[in-house]
Amino acid sequence: MADRGLAVYAAAYPAARPYLGAWAASLRAQTDRDFDVWVTADGLDPEALKRTLDLDRAHVVETPAGATQTPGQLRALAMEQLVDRYDAVVFVDVDDVLEPSRVAAARQALGQWDVTGCRLRIMDESGGDLGVVFGPIEGEDPCAYLPRWNVFGLSNTAYRTSALRECLPIPADCILVDWLLASRAWVRGKRIGFDLEPRMRYRQYARNTAHVLGPSTAAGVRRATELVTAYYRQLLAPAPVGDPSRLAELHRAKASIERFERWSASSEEGMRTYVERLNAMQRRYLWWWSVAHPDLEELWRA
Image (cartoon, rainbow, N blue to C red; front, side, top):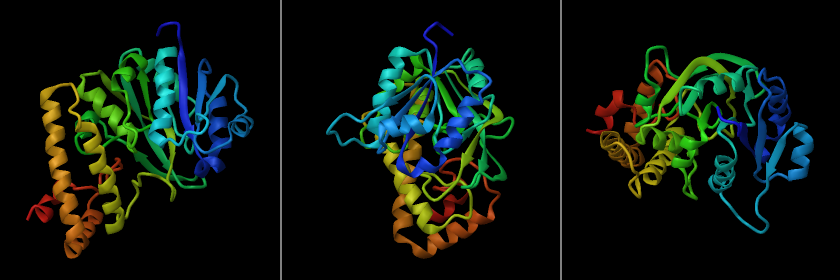
């Protein structure tokens, strides 16, 4: 890595306030402490946030005075500053906990890759280990999921800023920022790696955007489908620059998801069957695995 160094970035928001102390403590426990911390204050008082975190080399990104900005815009504001100041960014979520090796492993991986991810160990709201690991299994290509699912979150990834810069800007209404960035990097042919060692503990609770634990419900699948269809619109309009075959995969996935959305909104009986069969399958712990699952395609293409 070059001399400009590495930043750890997260966004803090009111729902995550109970978890800030544990998150900050896990940063202080890193085996590699040679990094700056950047935190977006999304709906939190910046000075109070600094006192709560009590971290050295911490920079709080404040919301511009009088501005009303979406979560995507706030994160984009920080990323646009980070790409000009650092060689690499490690993304983490403030409601999760870093394992002590998280930063050191990310730094080492970025010596080889433009983008890297790691598995996560899933915990409950109080921090109890659920005995479940999120991510690909050995021998799988995590990038092969990207047209339909995602394993590259803003809790478990790190980017060289030279690659991250090419993945910006972020649409103002974007919610699935993590998937958007990873897909843009993939389409542009960036070198993407994945660490099978869990380097984060991922908290599942009611306020999560994405729920990976079962059982699935019809309402939950429909809500996830809305987010996924919005993601495809943001990713593909206007058309991104990149590998034509990968773009074609994304367009096919978009069309498939849109068919599923229309069907799921109009067929109560079909959705009951879909959810029953989905819950009977061996569950994979991947973001958006429950949406338009290809193994159940005969239900919603009929």
